[in-house]
Image (cartoon, rainbow, N blue to C red; front, top):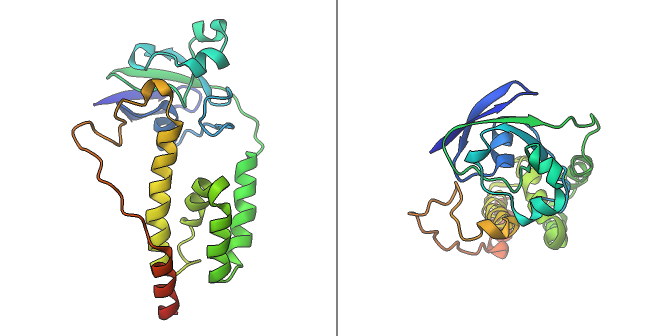
Amino acid sequence: MEAELKFERENISGIGVVGSYLIDASRRLGVEIFDDCGRLGLCDSCAVTVKSGAEFLSEPTKAEIEQLSEERRANGERLTCQAKIVGEGEIVVLTHEKKEEKPHHERVNEEFRKEFDALPLEQKVSRLMELEAVTLSETFSFILNSPYTLGGKLVEFLSGFGLKFEKDDKDAKRPDEHKEEPTAEEPENEPEKPAAAPDLDEAVEAEEKES
């Protein structure tokens, strides 16, 4: 099932899958919405105004009630990281004006990418493991967009590990009100298969043999 999304400020229209969050649906259509708190519902940086079609979105979560005043909610404001598409229909969205300055996390990512590309293989792996506890999700997302910095076996390992981490990370950040509901990526009639844990030692050993 799908809903039709219209972003007035950007003059962009497209389809959003029922079960997906408004922030994900907007980004798939090329509408960039920032989330300074990492989609945890701890700020209002991803807020938008839903001009029509609010009935096709989930009810405001506890996080939205805490971050958005009653007046703002009455005017149709929602946090896109919390608002989930739940019905078929037209949803008209007005994004808030943002400063032109590039977000801090993007600047940090670019600096790290340059430093990472210059490292030898062993130091690349070591650096990734050091960052695992704090920035693994973002690290994998932009390192895997540089396919020529690593050989095939290690990239394959990182891809599998990174995608699994991304999924676990997204699940952990879902609002408590939506934890028991299937997402657009996880249909209710398709039980999730347990993911096999990737073996880093085997990936590195195979990479060294081929190099």
